[in-house]
Image 1: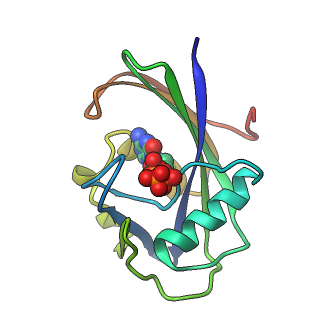
Image 2: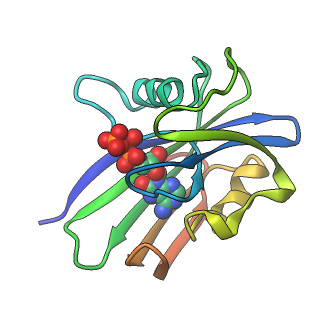
Amino acid sequence: MVNRKILSLVFVRESTKILLGFKKRGFGQGRWNGFGGKVEQGETIEEGAIRELQEEAGVLSHDLSKIGLLEFEFVGEPTILQVHVFTTTSYIGLPTESDEMKPQWFEVDRVPFDEMWPDDSLWFPLMLKGAKFQGYFLFHGHHNILKYNLEEVERFKY
Ligand SMILES: Nc1ncnc2c1[nH]c(=O)n2[C@H]1C[C@H](O)[C@@H](COP(=O)(O)OP(=O)(O)OP(=O)(O)O)O1
């Protein structure tokens, strides 16, 4: 039986820049990504996103916009990761390194896709142009995408 794990992923934007974090440990270690993680029992997905952003990057935002819904399946693994992607341009606090992430601003035309999850280069252009998107990716290991679909949407199914 397939089960789904719900995760958040938050990108802070500022004019031509985007805040990424270098993952220092755990799932996705050694890659740049947004900030996020597992939604805990008793919190909404957005509450989980706000908490993870504060824990991992030291910034607080209560003004998140949901812009993406991505599902990741890994060959041989029973759990599908369902990642809810948010952006914000409104936050307080200075991005600060945590035990999990090292934050750094990047110009949007200098995003380090070679050091990120391979799916990111496919949906970042949609995010950066302000579209809402939904996608599914089947991975073999953590480096190879065997198949995927990705579309712009008006609204999300969840
Ligand atoms: N393929 C891909 N592309 C982009 N982003 C992601 C993926 N897969 C992913 O899991 N992610 C995102 C979703 C989450 O934001 C993180 C993973 O969260 P994780 O570190 O496992 O969750 P935490 O709750 O912070 O983990 P622990 O604190 O329990 O270690 O990557």
